[in-house]
Image (tube, rainbow, N blue to C red):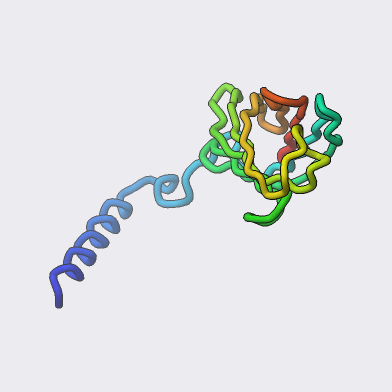
Length: 147
């Protein structure tokens, strides 16, 4: 048997022995944080300072180990949007919104379709809900509801 297989086998035996004496909570799934789970997100952007149209997006997000990831649309296509960031134990968070523009009438500066963009979102969560706001360019508000 090649040496690499012996090392993998030995490593598996050590892990199995370690967990054999572990408490039941160590053997099962890890504990989840108070924010972990599935969330629904509503993003509403007001009319832009240059007349860019208002819009509302609805999309799902998940929080695992206090880290949020939400996504709307199809990666690489117009209107695609992601929202990512860590939620601190006190509920505070700075999230990063990134995406690709779609129709120029909806973007500040009337950017061409598929133009990448990014912005920060200042947010706060409690165990069942949260709110946030875009910090630059135009007024955009986020509402988070845990499912």
